[in-house]
Length: 111
Length: 115
Image: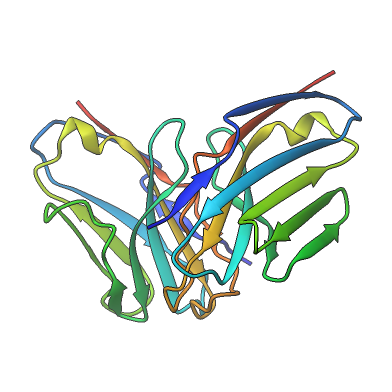
């Protein structure tokens, strides 16, 4: 089975930095995805980590520790448009890309 | 190019009725996925197609749910004898080959409401 834990909600101020944590337990592990989902819209791909360490992509970075079953998404220079849900999806050993999502973290960015 | 499209965008039906939800994946994508998302939850996997065949249908909640992809492109999710608990957003996604590193691209979803 799979167990994924993320904070339910977070708030932050425009221009600030926020870190969204995700801990997980999976049967096997291939990698971990982060998706962004604005209210009423489809999830969109943000990042994929397979090796330990930090992957930086513009204002967004994602970190993975396989041994600790832990990942985080780091958002810098927050903008109002970053208000959305952020979904962590660790990938177990299924032989294909079957995404199992956590409940997501709803981030609210205020002025 | 065109992304994943889903029709209808909204569907309201009565308890006990039959519904069909359609997904048109990105052209050339062999892998297609259906997910269901309830309010305040992440998407929940339902079924995965590789080409025309259902490679994994372990997420379908019961035998009222069925999906097809007869020509390896468009897919239809069929729900018989709908129940109020089936109300959710049904998301479709496609990826190039279904490989573990392939990005899944999601459609806008169909919001199903069962009265």
